[in-house]
Length: 42
Image (cartoon, rainbow, N blue to C red; front, side, top):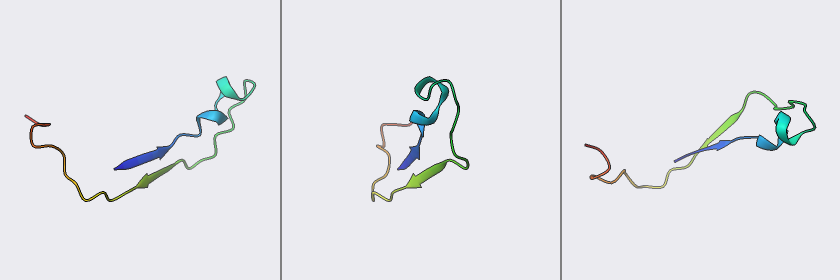
């Protein structure tokens, strides 16, 4: 499972019109030991 750290609170709409997103953005990976459902893909 991939979980993005969005920093949405640092975008213009939430931060008085100023973009203060800190780069690089992060994506966390978590091993959950499961595969997609066999009926999920054709």
